Length: 190
Image 1 (tube, rainbow, N blue to C red):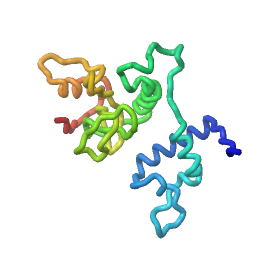
Image 2: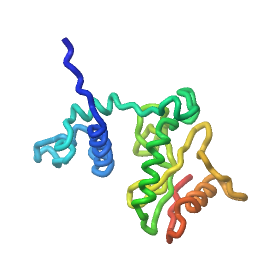
Image 3: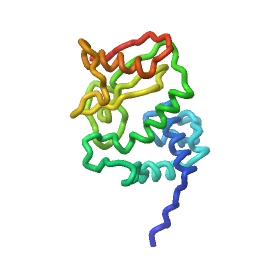
Image 4: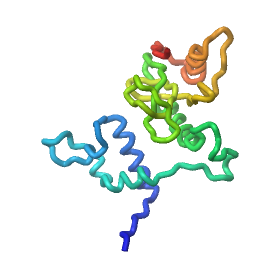
């Protein structure tokens, strides 16, 4: 007889997301290193105090974000690969705008978000395969971002007259999110 699988609740998913944020801040080469208990093998991380490694891996394996069918007109065949993430991503972006004041030096760059579905391959990036976004970042943290697609390019881009798509994206990002902020912008888009 197969063992019963534990049912997870919203509190478990919140801890899971908290651990994902922790993993993003405190990088280690492998996920299992966050549950080490021997100080001679590496640093002792705090996620093991809140959730077992097995529980984390099960939630990671089975968590599926989807929009209720009545809430939108997007179908699984939608060309915009990010349509299921639009709602949680917008919530995070609003919270970042409300609770975080960036410094005066921000950067705008194309970056890869590690994932396993609908990926782009960029061999010269630290993450070789993932989803591409254009991000405004401050001190190593993404403050806000714009979705990017192989088919559509930079999404929701207002094309400024006499400007390249990259220049338009920079001006639009500053116009929408950088109001009343003294900014020094560093560009590395090619």
